[in-house]
Length: 488
Image (cartoon, rainbow, N blue to C red; front, side, top):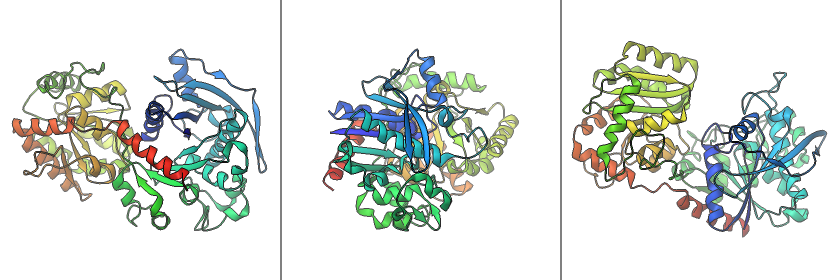
């Protein structure tokens, strides 16, 4: 079947999180399965810079065209490249006013937060490109709030055009907390009939809510892990849309994200100082030794390094770590943390690291190569998330024989099986439930105790490294969802 992805991010070209990873990997696996796939994304400054760095010049497909809708008008230029390492077409929507900005989600040059206008334009541009290029998708796969208007445009009469007569929509929620909500006066930006300003469409307690509209009008809805699909239908985790999701639960599917198992492979990873696999875990010590040196630690095989690679925001739960960091260090842990985010969290972590330079190192920022070295050289990876739709870091860690210590929420509960002393044949990490610093400390302390038992630890490492987190597994489930959508 012909599948068109519409997304605001594609890794490695322009991304801020897991959304980009999914849209940079899943289309390639679907293509290998025999589907005809194309991906649309905005041509951000960051994308242009990525192509420049890699010596790639996307070529212009059409003369610049004018996109008009409602009372709005804007120019779009369509460029073509391919997803790295594949022949999957990548169609880039260029408009310097909307997308030539310092950050992907930056405000307009005048300081106005025009988020809804710029992604409404993107949605209209995807539609127009399909018409001009005679692309007739069987499935229009829309991702997060940025493309949430597309299922409504299909419903509003777009299926009357030749390109969209058979098209069905699949909508994927990557993070329910980001819904694209705006004031009621923003409805005019959409160009939709007033029928869609209603509680069974875009209106949500007096606001415009694109994500709500997509959940209601898409033929199938997916999210990025089975447990998250259950959680978001509860009041605690539903972010105000739990009732809407329960009402359409028959079409809500939880599909665990995958990872690129070629890029994340400790046996071949060019960013590691030493290579190893499940049969040569002794060589992981070389990676630990190198990380110890980089962090300023005196190497000790007996003391565990607890790593973390994360955005430093409340969602990721590092406010739980800070109150017990000194206690963990006193108990014998060494901490190697890479991340950036909220200044309050950054400053607290840096302050504690400055007090314990021999046992704690915090790097503020993001460094992909360093992230790989932490996954390879650490003994454990800490992920104390308040909520986690899927999470990829724990999958990377398991692949590298680095045991995760996680809060059992969302996709973390789907991928990490906590060791309880009796389930060594299946366990691959450690976990806690309550969002409390003491529970984080206790789970990490239990992991540190088990680290001292080499036999148990190697068994848990082997269990983790044997897990299948490839995209092939997930892509087969997406294929089934696409086929259900076509039957709707």
